[in-house]
Amino acid sequence: MANTYTTTADGDNSTDAKFRIWGKWIDDQLLAMGFTQVTDNGATASNGGTIDWTTVTKPGASSTMQIYSIFRFPDGALQTSHPLFFRIDYGSGRTSANNPGIKLQLGQSSNGSGVLGGAAVTTQVFMDMGATANGKHMWACGKGSEGRFMFFLWDDSGTAALNCFFGIERSRDISTAAMDSRFAHMVAYGDFTYMAQAGRTGITTIVPNVGSGARVILGLNSLVNVTGSHMKGSNIQVYPIWGLMNALGTPSGSNLGPLFGLVLVPYAGITEGATFTATHYGATRTFLPGQLGTAGGSTASSYLTPYTITSAVVPAILWE
Image (cartoon, rainbow, N blue to C red; front, side):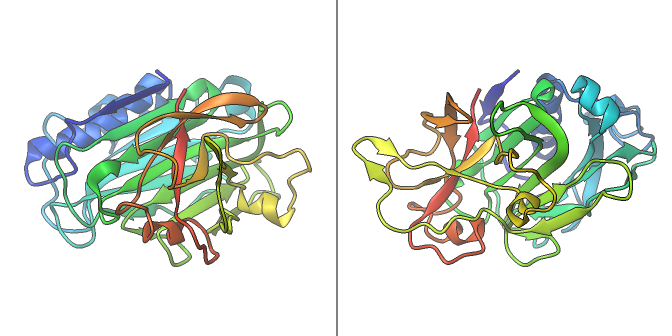
């Protein structure tokens, strides 16, 4: 599976059934993409644990996680030499038990009891949704064999309080688009995303090399300062997103490329959910743009960059 969507998994925890549907849908898409669930004694039943998506109950309070799954990357030799594991928790947001909440964590190992480890492991990132919505889109795109996945959740809700997107991908060589072992990037957005820095969006750059050189850097980093016109005829400008460590020049190498599965585009000239093509990593690729807020994306746009911008930009995920 490369990409899919649903409008039947509501962003709503008001009943056990609604909570189970949206959480299990995310788990199912990760499996369809080829990511491998890891046996864990506290995770979902399909993960070898004791909690089952058919019986788990909705959160009884705000900021409460009910269930989690742990996956590993399936990408062959890279997973053997530079392993990546991630844990995803499902529950409620910080203001209401009925609002969805997700935690995401990236590491290099799993101890079978819910704890990720390794020489470099991130803190859990809490993506809080500040509202509920029904009948809206959840989009998913990724391939385990290509070391990437991205999700847009309830992106067409029309309010930044509900929108969420998140994903993880391995770094790539800018010339060949081949995955490499230097970094992994974790992207997270919610109504409020609890990270080491203030703001709603962050990119966590993790060096998955086991040893003294491993490190984790959290930070806002799209390196985009959007001004002026973005259209030339029917063509639209696409802005790549660079990982923080590469931007700092430590210790990336000159051929390290931007994120492969996520770019930024100006709101003007695109339609949310309508795919477009653009040249990225030397080839014509298909992207699906989101919205993240009210029409024009004007309020949410400032959360995508540490700089003041004068025109709205929105994320677009690789849709292939």
